[in-house]
Amino acid sequence: MLNFCRPLNPLSPDPCPLYSLLMFPDLNQRSREILKTIVDAFMATGEPVGSRAIAERLGMALSPATIRNVMADLEAQGLLHAPHVSAGRVPTDAGLRFFVDGILEIGDLAAEEKNTIEAQCLAQGKNLADVLARATDALAGLSACAGLVLAPKTDRPPKQIEFINLAPGRVLVVLVTEDGLVENRVIDAPLGIDSGTLVMAGNYLTRRLVGRCLADVQRGIEEDIRLRRAELDELTGKLVAAGLAVWSGAAEPVQLLIKGQSKLLEDVNALQDIERVRQLFEALETEESMARLLEAARGAEGVKIFIGAENAFFAHAGCSAIVAPYKNAQEQVIGAIGVIGPLRMNYARIIPMVDYTSKLVGRVLRSTILPLEGRAGR
Image (cartoon, rainbow, N blue to C red; front, side, top):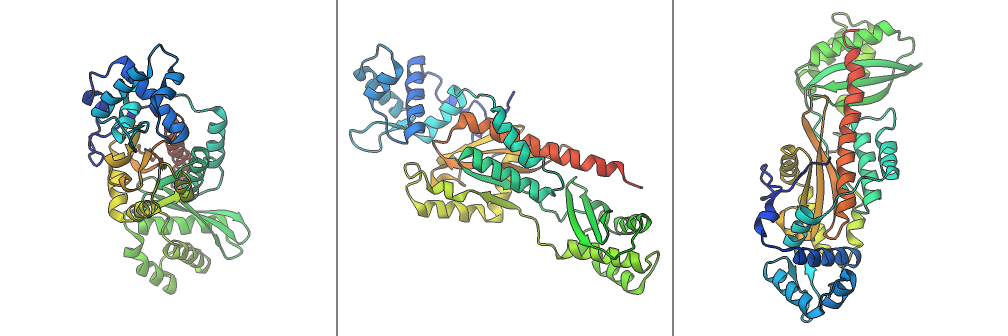
């Protein structure tokens, strides 16, 4: 069963799943049916929906006049609005919120979609950045929205460093942080290195780096290598130097990754102003926005849904976002993944898609880390 969190205040860590239901307790079944019909039609076309079209869709013995009266009541309650004089109605952000909270029926993710996501996330030999990039690509492609992932910073102190022989002159360097993240780098290594040298190099770096950031001890390690101190013979020193260089010289992994931005420009009915979309991405690129969005997901046990103007991040572009946290091997929330799309995105299909992807990413993290921990102290 999916677990959803929908915020009363989108910037508050205390979500209220019954928000819109509490706001509109007296909405009767007929009003709900008409609101649902309007939302369904709006999601399909992006156009305002009139009373005659609703009567045809409902197939009920309701006259257009009766439907218009119900629509007027829904508009008075702030659930609908008329974008033009004498036009049909479209749902407001509050109307979409009520629909998602109280009317929407969530289906199961199709087997084909699960297979597509799994094929991306479960690819072998990939580091965390690759897994997140592939998962975001899969979400963007399947949802026809922009995929979003917030990746954790990797300046956490390491827990373990290991060197694994791949081929003559090629060694895999594996770093496991205290937060349970795994990063892999393939380096060029001197020929003639045996398993003992690999273990010695890994043990040396692990002892000096565990609980400390690389920048704090890098100069001392480089001095040890230069003077061949302690157990560092020539080959081990070269290997340690190569491993140290690849981590200290590597660009910081992506903290905010967005794929499929162009999809936000395709729905001209939902996103009228390109300038608003530009403002959206400028907001997402700030550290404050990223931290606050991650904090909003951190306290959630499931999918979190942000609709339009109820959230400061997406209000400018008339967007909605569906985001879910993912966890490391210690069951700590370390990031979030999801999609940003038009208000009329297919919530019923995309919500379980985001939920499944976030859980799969967490599963990949756990399955990657456990075998490495099992080799500790080798």
